[in-house]
Image (cartoon, rainbow, N blue to C red; front, top):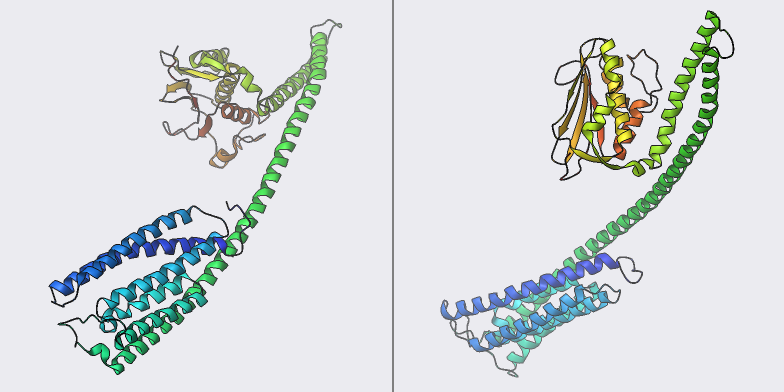
Length: 472
């Protein structure tokens, strides 16, 4: 993050400027190697006569100077204040200016205006156009042309000596005024044309870059506002859900007490404590009692939802044997299955895996799954299996029953949802509560119908994490 409020376009301009300065440093290393290679080739391959010592001294100066620039750029890269962009631009300006001066000195010792590499000035002015503002680019272009012209005329009038490239060009070529002017004019045309094109393209790219960054900032701001709105909405919904769960807990608890009292009174009358009950009266009282049993079961299910949602299961968590939980879940259900002529198969490992959970709630889940399998299986068998994996355990309850229609599978664990092929009555909360319980144990539960192993019936499976390095 910036320490101060950035001006428009500051961030992209600064990033681009730092990147370009780094590129120029890398190019300068290559230039030094190129100068040495060209000088040696000219001297020993093409037998052009000139003194190599000044060239090597200039290369050494370039190496030292470029290393200093490299260190400066590293320091500059760590600075994120607004003033750094001015320092970076000034640094770039001075680097190009010094490069032009070095090039001019190098040309003086390698043939002056007669050296074909005099047009390398164009590369420097192009770099200035990319790196700097339009005004500074034209300033450096003018300086480049001025340095070349100054070098040419100082040598022409004999103010400074001229190094002839013996064996490459005529000796007195630098004394021919037409040649000097033609080179200077050509160089001026090339450098100013290059600067004009480069600044136009670079300026347009900067504008496009700025527009893109402004658009990005606008979109990010809009996304931030939208995320804040969504976060507020989620918080509000969570608060409403918590309030509703607490209200549900209070209401269902208040409903349970009078229903239990009414159930007790009906049982008292059915047992004959209030006098003889004729068969017709007994039938009506029994119907009422069954209705109340159904309501009490619904209330119990409704009470489970707020208890689970409010995290009360955490208080019941303990290390437990899953074999024992499954065994206790089967109590009483074997008799119910036997009465329907169903086989109840149980597959448990010899050493029970240990899990951390609520024994009562896990037993509630397994009992619900087995009870559903018994209710919706007319013949065949019901199988309960426990499988231990590396980091988790899975419990599966499969049956040979009526199965579940494909369109019902996605909603089967929703509150109050019942399969379209189910005729028996129920609250539609059993599987929803089972899912909540398993989720509270950091597990997951799902159903497959038909059972992939048999091609018919259903199989309910849930997995929960295993207690590591512990077995019973």
